[in-house]
Amino acid sequence: MDLNERRELNNGFGEALARAFELVLTPVIFGFFGWLLDGRLGTRPVFMLLFFALVMGYEFWKHFSMYDAAMKRHEQQLPGSRPRADS
Image (tube, rainbow, N blue to C red; front, side, top):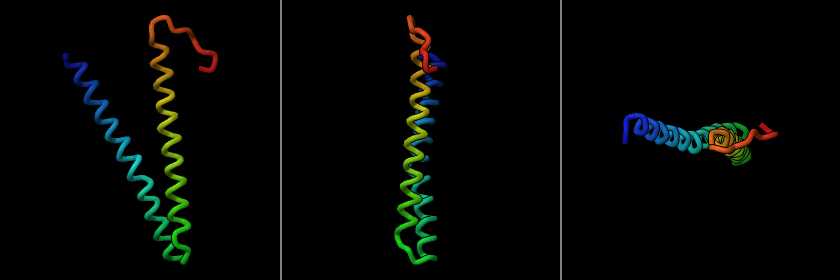
């Protein structure tokens, strides 16, 4: 395995770890803020669940969009690929 392959592999591991932390910690942080807001307003667990669900939905959408764009770029690099009408 040459240096460029190792660098690409390590970058992939780092990116995957960053995405995993983002996928877990961001909804938890917003859920915590919702919990604090619920405590002030006495509406437990409305805002906690609402903030958590909204951020989870956004995270799933964002990761799917990033994955879809990466796959389209990868498909364009394949031998024999034709330009797509939706790109």
